[in-house]
Image (cartoon, rainbow, N blue to C red; front, top):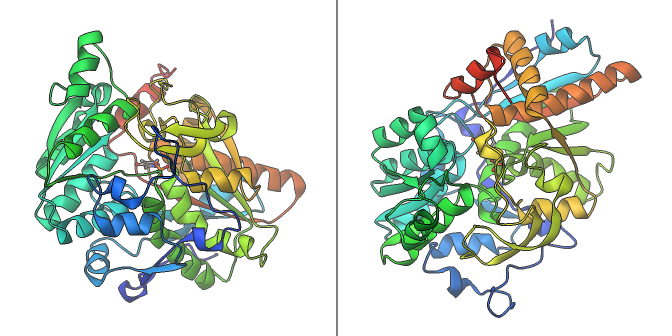
Length: 433
Ligand SMILES: *Cc1c(COP(=O)(O)O)cnc(C)c1O
């Protein structure tokens, strides 16, 4: 029987994050000031982010040391396991070898604490009293609530109203970690009041919640804002995932042929894939393939335009050059709440435009079929977001079967679905749209 588990010891948690920008011949174009269309300087971001985060956002350094205190907190749940999906391979009757990294082994159930801990650390060091943020389904809000509690800071979360009403469990998790949670649009910000005046029943969106959280930080001195995806420093912090996987694949005696991750704002894909993409950018592994998996109903990479756009709905953020469906795009209410974002990480967008990666979209029906089949065979109930990566891995494994090829397919299982049971309930009862 082939080995299934590839586990690292806590002293093998990486000591450095990898900054892919250092190896890109054409780094992503800089963010612009919407008023002047000139590149924005670090001082423009200072009211909402701590200085060390701003430095990381624009850093040209290839590796950035993970502070010892952050590494120590990572030990609460890291290193995370890499598994070979032997049972799924058998069920698919494929000669492909399928490996998955499991990031669902912490209380918030996803990869998001990897950056939440780091961001909370830098905020604490620079004297922040409270952090404001947005959350969709609640994974990011719960990760940041946990991080703020660990560092003794307050946390305010603007949660998209549909999720606030329909998905109470992560709200309870956030409140248990001491956060203050508002349904967004809320009457706690000027922007929220404006939206509510126009549409009292507005279901909210990630873009609206971001606008509210930024306004909160910008209008209070000792309050900073924190974003759970998209930005360069978030992708940077997530590379702790891929740096672990490199060691684990070495234990397995393999190197991937195909690397897959689901993409909302792009951070778990980036964190998993960039440490391997280094080998493609330097020319060491020219045939290595990378695939971003996204919902057919919010297809920013496969169908978005590559242009400067706002990160939020109100237009408060700098303009970022990215694959985007437009900042006023309101995605349909699919169950993969974490993938309902109109834009994409500027680094991922540039790598896609430069031909270093591919993308595929999948329907809600296909991804739940694939996720349930995965659960039957591998015994983990995946997050609906992660089901997109599983569906694409499945497609590639079936292609291997048809071609009689034994490729090595690796994907990131970004989180578990134990707080998304209402989505599985809809799937089981046949009422999923
Ligand atoms: C938030 C989330 C995502 C999407 O965010 P990215 O920044 O694209 O990684 C994917 N999977 C899970 C489980 C999430 O919580």
